[in-house]
Length: 259
Image (cartoon, rainbow, N blue to C red; front, side):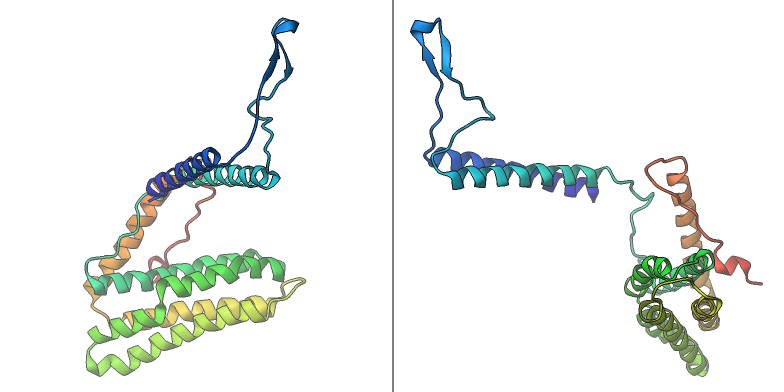
């Protein structure tokens, strides 16, 4: 995907250059080099490529603006292309139930990661800056309510009420963590009660999901968890020793600690 975007950027850059060239041919401007034969070919007026004088100042300004945009756009596209790639591009599971369970497993993993942020944090604003976006990404990317609703269709009718209640409560707990970080964290030191509220909400999200997952097809769940484990392993191998990859420090997956 990055290579494709890079090619598009270069193509767009070339189109702009072409447009500038066509514009310059159709726009009257004057530049000349005058030489004096009586002065041993010494130029009396020298105009270099970087010192072109235009009849219309607005044309000169427009050309310089376009050239600046082109240079900036190309530099940005090259920087984007040099970003580290994940070991494996995300591809949805061909089995919709396994895919939905995989996303639920990722939510559980994410709650552990967010708890780690909270434990290390000392300042409200710093924690808010770090967690506000990540929690919203968890909500938008994994769509927990949608996954609970879909997986519920595979739960036996006699267990459906209990399972659905646990799944919906998990979604509510996650939302409460999002709301607290967004609305209650201000500035100054982070106190114990604030930490406890966030970690309790995240922990409850995870535990309610364990209750919900007790009622889904076990084989499919194990396959979804295995996919998470394999992807994490591949990412560790990909980023290990890569100076441009930053710090990749995965958490212990929550089902690994569960008896």
